[in-house]
Length: 395
Image (cartoon, rainbow, N blue to C red; front, side):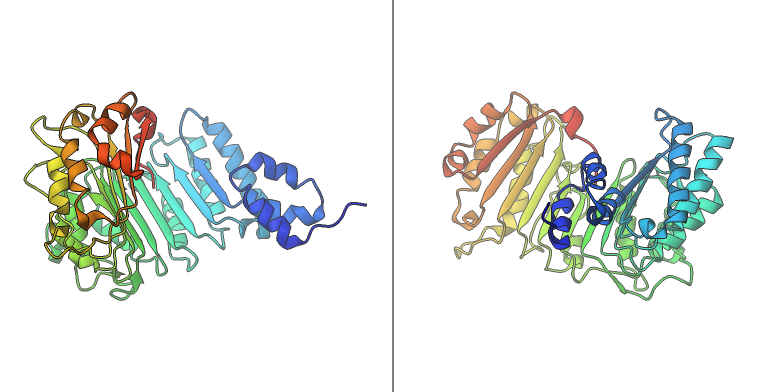
């Protein structure tokens, strides 16, 4: 006779299989005690796509099947914690496309316990009103705490701000605009619907902002955030991810509690040096997607400018513990990194525990020769990667 495993142990086992749906499907066949726990993992994350290579007929069949299943068994819909829509609004309107959008809207309205909503490569203005309404409604659900809109195309900033202003319990926000929307040039031009939440009532833990085409949009985001009636507050912000073009003086607006900072790409102008004087409690610093746009630009000099406010004559240690650097350009590894090695030898940086590099293949050995002290300290890790696969905009 097989010994019955306590349900708590079954749950712990199956939680480790949430990324392996095939195994979860097999586990659901083990016995009645395993079914619910397996289903909780099977339906935890749903990704719907209208990408044309997948086939619109297959998309329609899968979406209708899920919608019908959730209609028959609402408890399965309650297991869905994460929903991602990919490539919506990009296909030409047809009977199949319209049917997919209708089924998607119906499915979304059945999700009663959604925590994370992601829109990837979505053209908001091209969605039919029925689907936009369903997405707007789910954004207002009290269970939603994470929202991601990457490669996102929306016509006006006011429409985007209105959508974001409805998420009363939002903790994690990531927005990367694909095209240049009709952005306001001043606060007086930004009119948000009256049903948005009270000022500073949405306290974010994590914020990521990026822009594929127009860096001015980031500064206009910052302008909105500083507006008195903006519903977002940053008093408890723990993690910030922004392009390096953002004026780092804006960091003081996010408070001194920031512990994780990611800067993407080098500033377009070498003179636009960021600095870390407003981040006294920073523990993790990531400099990623670093590629060459000016052969005269010295990346190490830029990093030295970042660290300059942390240098002092009193021998105090900085709070920084972990540094991650991702270099896309081979030429940026040819010179200068020995100065970086010497910089981190200074006593102020004794608290740094790890320095992790991601570089193009075949360059790891050359970099180690320029970082002899770091390598000898055991703090250095160099990982050679294929940037064609590694370099992508993800949340």
